[in-house]
Amino acid sequence: MEERVVISPARAAGLRYETEIEGITALAEFSRLDDAVSAVWNSVRALPIGHTQYAAYEVFFGDGAVDRVQDLFKRHGEVRLSFRLCDRSHSIVIRPSRRR
Image (cartoon, rainbow, N blue to C red):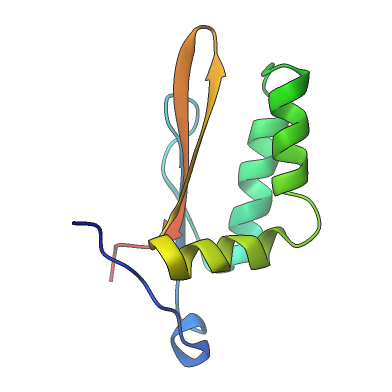
C-alpha cells in the first residue's frame, strides 16, 4: 500500500524533495519544490522525446506546475510520470524526501 503524504504549511517549511528520471538522471534532493520541478523540466526538455510528449510535458511543467505537483502529493504522495525514449519507458518521480 502506498503511503499518502499530506503536507501542512508548517511541515513544508523544512521539507526536502527528491527527483529522479529513471535511466537518465540520478536521484537528486532539493530544499525547494520549485527548484525540484525546474530541474526535472530542464532535464526532460533536453531529451529527444518527440513533439507530442514534449508538448504534454511543457503544459504540465508550465504555469502552475508547483501547485499541480503539490496537489498530486496530497492525492498520491508523489508525482510519477512516464515517457518513451528509444523504445523504452522511463519514469519521472518527484516526491517529498524519504530521508529524515
